[in-house]
Amino acid sequence: MNFLTIVVRGLLRRPVRTGLTLVGISIGIAAVVALVGISHGFEASWATGMKVRGTDIVVSNMGNALAPKPFSAEVRDRIGKLPEVAAACSIYADLTSVEDASMMVVSAREWGGFSWQNLKLISGRMPNDGMEDAVVLGQTAAEMLKKKIGDPLQLETKELKVVGIVDGGAMVENGSVILSLELFQKITGNEDRINVIDIRAAPGMSEEAVKQLCDKINAIAPEAKAMVAGEHLGNSQAFRFISAMSWGTSLLAVIVGVLGVMNTMLMTVFERKQEMCILLAIGWKPSRIIRMILWESALLGFLGGIVGVIIGTISVKVLEQLPAIHGMLEPDFNGGLMAVAVVLAVVVGVISGLYPAWRSSRLTPSLAMQG
Amino acid sequence: MKLETTHASADVASEVVFEAKGLKKEYDDGRVHALRGVNFRITQGEFVVILGPSGCGKTTLLQMLGALAEPSAGILHYRGKSLADLADPASYRAREIGIIFQAFHLLPTFTAVENVQMPMFETDRPAAERTERAVELLKLVALGHRLDHFPSKLSGGEKQRVAIARSLANGPTVLLADEPTGNLDSENSKKILELIIRLRREQNMTLVLVTHDLNIARMATRTIEMKDGLIVADQQVPQTAA
Image 1: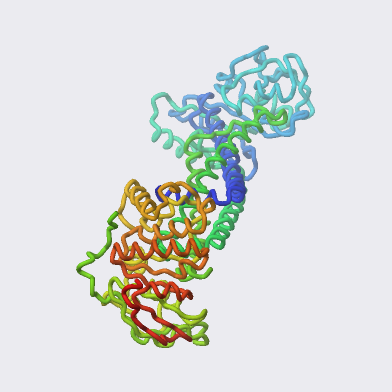
Image 2: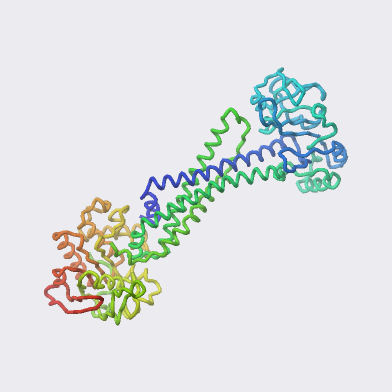
């Protein structure tokens, strides 16, 4: 028998209560894993979208809204003249309701721009020109909108025709309605307005050089902000708010878990008061009793963390299969997130055990002789 | 089986183990006087029975000897050192003394062999050695066949035997017993007493035993009778009885 055996027996003494506490803490950790995993996944997917489009720099004005603020299309010409810029593609991206889908990405791209090149046709064709009343749908968008080639699609007041279904190589691309920028500007009355410019840097430029190019662009285009692709989403206040909400909601669930563990450990100290006094009377140091309580709560946290990671992962996998959001989630359950979740659970366990441990340290061994 | 002890028997034969001078203990801000000034000396190898009615202070005195409680006034020395000034009372309880409780106080979620190992966690013994010693001790108290039984599966007498084995875990030179037969029937009481006395004699341990039972007092080498927090009689018992 070693010290860990004593710790484990302490938890097994009340298996139902230990089990319920485990459930409490694991729900908190599951919330962390699910919400943060979804949030990270969205960010990672956005970065993948940029990568498959071959975009090195994104110029946009990410304010408080989910979609970037529009600015003059003339900015693109200013930026395109820089010698370090190999190509620039104007885009108008919006998050809006399309027919029955409450929120979809509508991505209007400069006709002939490089941002069309990553789209692989699965069926149908690409629009014939920039003013054809046609759209292509990412494969997930087609599933969500229940559209096939030749079907009409109502966008704002204009009826367009679905001419192609494409694989964009990333969740965001596959969930988009894609059309030419010129057509979209005409439909929405936003002539000469864009809200994103995708930029390809000249071949062979180092990361540092790309960052310096961002500074250069920012100097000549104060209407928007140039950022290295993949980092721009993190700069969005709206995304930061969503991310903070994910953590906030998760932490609330974790706090409930903390209270659960603390309650269990306090009950343990009260119930096992005489047992602890006996241990003190037969020679255990108070520090060993404290360690026993802290190890018990840490183990409870650790097990809760493991169970929480499993529950969180399975929950999101189940969620992904729901018809309403199928294809919209691409959670990022990387090892780092799992490790952070388990470490968080252990820390929660230890913190929850501090007060009960302190209470146990105040027990006097003479109580062992009472009864 | 020869148990290991922290002191060689020959060296400590006439050594003063406990010495109390003017020992007092008050509770409830001085409203309750459990000990009112107690003086005595106990030497190595003695079997001292402390007698007296309920509330006379005998258990409080035993708590003081075990460093389970601190005196309100007076001096209590263990082998010449003040117990109040012990830097590490836990170490004293773990290594110098063994305590036997009236209610056995075994931990219910641990087997007999595991219960006996509990005091050994404050020593440097590795796990295998702890188990080996616990098995030896349980065999010594005739419980070699009950090693893996939980306390709920043991009789009262068996529980007290496990508690005795536990008290010997770290080879103490002093045994403190608080009404060790108080929860046992007469047959088991007799067997437990015989066991404690035999172990004390074999190991030349000092035994301080608190009881109401005058029959037990006759087996001791010395009796201390208490009343209202004071020692009212302190006398040697003829050696043939011990």
